[in-house]
Picture 1 (cartoon, helix red, strand yellow):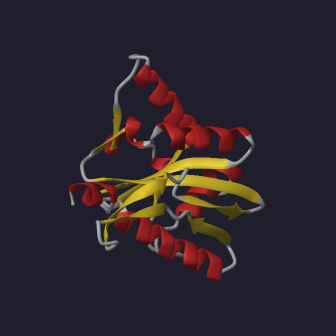
Picture 2 (cartoon, rainbow, N blue to C red):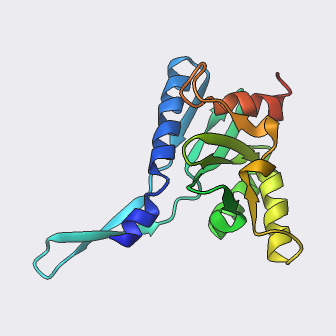
Length: 174
């Protein structure tokens, strides 16, 4: 049961993003989808499903298209005031790196206590994560260190309007 709880700690954030994505699509702003995780059922000796395990880890949580550019991001929930760089797993980091290298928009959407949200550009996350791995920097970033231009507003045109931040960071729109 603990593994399920650990795997689903970010579920409320993902549900909020899914709602925002539906609203973006309904308003013809963007098409962004949740990437499903493939599960394998585990059966007991009689063939009854008793549990499940992840068949293959999804690269990132969300993929889509916005303003003619491909977009990929992972959503990370944090119950405290800091988030560790290693919350992005190696396979996710490689995917975001490849995505950004191919002119895609790549970022990590961080939610602190389901109250404050930030779009952290992949390039920033990668640099700080590498600094930490090579013992040149901190292992995490605090909510106070998040840049004001990364802050996502709740409400507005959609439930969680993270694309307004994408507009500022990638398209130079205010």
